Length: 129
Image (cartoon, rainbow, N blue to C red; front, side):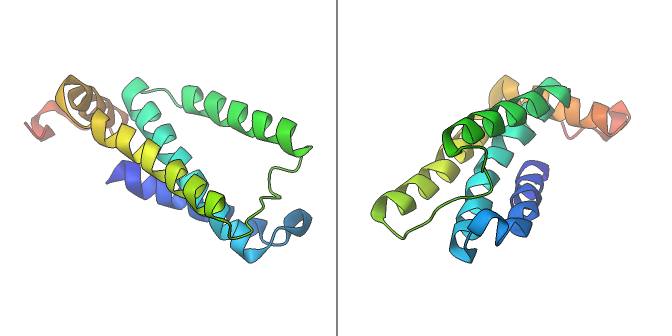
């Protein structure tokens, strides 16, 4: 729940980009959906590593590369309603979603839960095992 809730909040925090550098409402909704997929990855990376600076570095690198491609206008997403726009939106959410689901099984899940308990300062007796 923490991963998907934080990813949703991360995506919604980008709603303020409406009108920024001419970004349309449709493009902003596409951005919210797209960065929600990134939020899945950042949250899993944070819980798996237990370190906030690691997803922060990846977020910086993602924004930096996006800005290099867009001419320093990463808020200026485009969405024209083409099939490729919809396909890229689906891929930006489904691929990270698949990674998060994969991370929630086996030893990976144990690491996620141990780090989550440690980050929330929960005593050992509160473990879900």
